[in-house]
Structure formats: C-alpha cells, structure tokens
Image (tube, rainbow, N blue to C red; front, side):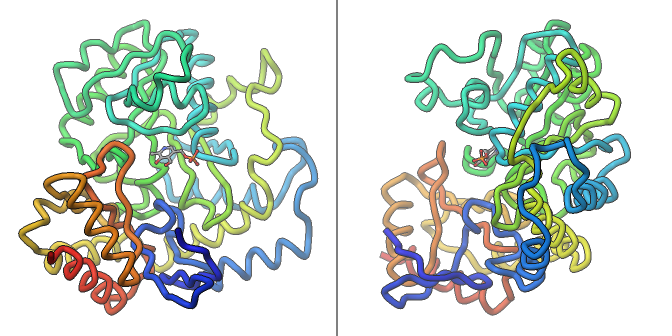
Amino acid sequence: MLEIASAEGVYIYTRDGKRYTDLISGISVSATGHRHPDVLRAIHEQLDHYLHVMVYGEFVQGPQVELARKLCSLLPPSLDSVYFVSTGAEATEGALKLAKRATGRTQIVGFENAYHGSTHGALSVIGDEYFRRNYRPLLPGVSHLRFNEPEDLQYITTETACVIAETIQGEAGIVVPDPNWLKLLRRRCDETGALLILDEIQTGMGRCGSFMAFEQFGVLPDILLLAKGLGGGLPLGAFISSNQLMKNLSHDPVLGHITTYGGNALCCAAGLAVTHLIASEQLDKRALVLEQIIRTKLKHPAILEIRGRGLLLAAVFENQQIAAAVMEKCMQNGLITDWFLFAPHCLRIAPPLTITDRELTEALEIFLSACQH
Ligand code: PLP
C-alpha cells in the first residue's frame, strides 16, 4: 500500500521517498496530470471568492455557468443542458430518473460487464452479479443484454425507458464495440422511443482520442454522463441532455434532482480549467499519437493483446496470476498500473493525457521488463 506524500504531473511520490509514474490517472481522473498549474491557478482564484453558498441551482454561480457553456460549445447542439452532480454514480442516478420521468416508462436496459457506479440505482444497472448479489432488492424492471450483440437489441421495447451503455466498456477490460452495433443500438432506441444514455465517465474528456468517444462511432446519446476527468481531481459529475428533455426535472416535483454539492464552485472552476486545456492543447489528438507509441513499443509474448482507444488501453494477459505478477513488479520498479473490476487478467494503461514521449517510453520500459520472468 502506497502512502502518498505528493503528486506532480505524471508522478506520485510516497512518504518513503519513492517516485512512481502514474499509468492509470487515479482511474481515468487526472486527465491533465496531477496539480496542473492552470488547474491550481483556477482553484486558487475561486478559493479567494467563495466555496459553497447554496444547494445547486438556487443561485447563479459563475464557475457552473462558464463550465456548462464551455462543455456545450464542445458537444453536439442537441446536448445543450448540463446538470452538475458530484460523482459518476450520481450522474447515473440523475440520468435514470430523467429517463423515467421523460418517458413515463419504468423498464431499464443495461449491459453485461458494464460499470456505472455503486449506489443502489447504479448498482442495479451494472452488469456483474458478484457485485450486485448481496445488495438486493435493487431497482425493479432492469434487464441486462450482451454488449456488442445485435441479436439482443430486440429486447429493447416500447416499454423501455432507457438503455444505458458505456461507449467503450471500461471495467470489462476495455471492450470497444463494433461501430455498427452502436448505430443499431441507436436505431433500436429510436424505433422504440427508449432514451439512450451513454456513460462517458471514463471514455470522455479526450481520453479516447476525441472529446467524447461517441464522436468516433457516429452515434449521439439522448443523455450523456460525465465525471472523473471532468473535475481535474476534484469531485464533479454531470448528466447532459437537450434542454427540452432536462425540463422534465423542473416540475412535478419542482426539484426533480436535488444535490447539495453538485456543481460545487471550486470543482467547476477546476473543471473549466481542465476542459480549456483539453480543447486548447488538443489533448484528445495527442492521446491517439501516444496510443501508437504504446502499440509499437509494448510488444511481448506475455501480452496477448492491447485493447482500447487513445489512452484508455488494456494489456491482456493469459490469466489473473500473470497480470498480478506483472503489476507487482511494475510497482516495485516505480510504475503504477492496475487491473479492472471485471477483467483481472488485464492491466490498465491510462496515463494522464499530458504525459511526454520520454515519460511514456520510460514507463513502457518498466512495464516490459516486468513482463520478463
Ligand atoms: N461509470 C463508469 C464508466 C465508471 O468507470 C465509474 C467509476 O469507475 C462510474 C460510472 C462511477 O463513478 P464514481 O465512482 O465517481 O461514482
């Protein structure tokens, strides 16, 4: 267990004086690295003005408005209403509620091996029985289909309020769907009137090579989920839809989703700095360049495959024991990697998007030497 002293850029320093390269960004959080000067500046400026003043939505708070505007300027026009929350799971909860409210339906469809958070609603839609089984009863009316399986889409019906999917599955060990399947999913939702919720909590904010991963698949969600990378290391999430759809949360009851800390001014100030950096430095494009470096250099007989897009990658090993041994060796040699919740035979390669070629090359050398045993 590491006892952390400080973190800077792609490095984490422990209290016993060791330096580690962060190859996982705190699970896809630190998109612009640790303590990026622009993010720190934004936080300090906001600190000098105010922190919490009122529960979300009651007062106009500049950082929330500015961040919502910035996000909408980078997203397709139909995603023009942002509801800030504090975590990914809360974004999932808000989206599920919005879908039920907007459609008047109660059935929800999720996918096997999906991860959307750990609160009761989110837990109901995740696709892994081991994590769900001891917390029943969960939400009624939830079914799970096979991801990337066209045949199963027939089970989305006119009773379905929404379908929730990760654009690229993260905790399944980075599973990229066939673009045609995502298009079929979109079409089936249109046919049945089910809303499509795309969870881009890991895949968004430039990590997969475009601002949102869905841009690469030619599909558009009705509701988009963001968190993790959005807050630049502070707790921030959002569910985003059209204004017309979002209005459903404004009446009957008057406050359809209530959150004290959602859109916290400090978190939004940090989020705005992160979003600016991703856009102005084209960190999404950079992720694709770095992906190629990884695919070229990370070749070893023990690595069966590198799966994923941009800087959301998984190195696939034959079994969990091998992956665990490689992870252990990486840690001994100053490199932080990790397994996936539903794929312990895979190791995570998801460094900050700001990692330099040299830093990445050094990290890959450690990774490769850890594969040698
Ligand atoms: N959705 C996805 C795809 C995630 O990977 C996660 C967290 O790992 C969540 C939702 C939940 O986010 P949080 O832990 O902030 O609740």
